[in-house]
Amino acid sequence: MPTDHAEPGPAARRKTPAQRLRGWLILAAILAASAFGLHQISKLRCFALLGPLVCKVETVRPEVALSFDDGPTAEGVEAVLPVLRAHGARATFFLIGRELEQRPELGRRIVEAGHEVANHSWSHQRMLLRSQGFYKKELQATENLLDKVREEDEPGLLFRPPYGKKLPGLALAARENGLIMVTWNVEEPTTTDPAAYARQIVSQAKPGSIILMHPMYAANATARAALPLVLQGLQAKGLRVTTVTELMDGARADAEAKARAKAER
Image 1: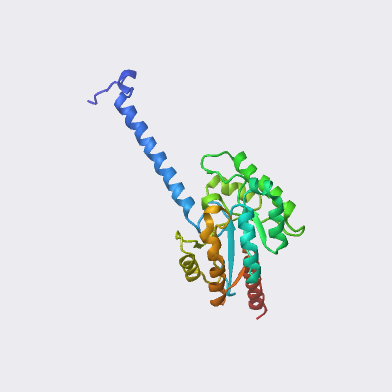
Image 2 (image 1 turned 45 degrees about the vertical axis):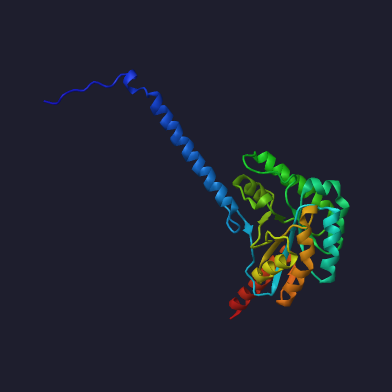
């Protein structure tokens, strides 16, 4: 005959302190692993959980985009603009909102020289574990200032996340503001030798590359000294140096022309 078994009582079902501790440790390990995974994903230059994201452009045109991060500072702008002009090059300056608020005349000088200004957040703080309201304010406040220095017909399209970290909440805020996240596929090297700095950038650059440089602060003397060598090297490779938006627009125009030609066959 089947034997009836009594249901365990509340005391028998209650977890021991050791069992509760083990459960909390497992939960903590899962959360830590998830946070580490998100952090690693956020560092991938050409991947984002939420897009759109551009780290390079597929193009047959012999063009690259040159981008500068941070500032604007007088030291950086006064060093960079004459070199760009001398080489007939254009660039995209990803500016920090609170620094642009302090020195709006430098933003206007960049635009008047024929270059592009874009969003690099308001404060350039670490963006981990922030609210959506914080992310939106960082982007919108900066975009409002950029609109005051841009040409009237120049839309704000681009955002470079601080430290290149494409955290999901920040990426979502960028998308909601109609901004395209832009990273890079050619990064400046960690050297104090301007010639070595330039050689490494030039060796990696190819059509469609987006190049990252930091020329704005006192500690960035190597980048400023290397800039003429970078531009000379890129031009020697037959690469035209332009803005991120122009690089994207050229590739899009070529793709549309190719599609039309295919449809007309």
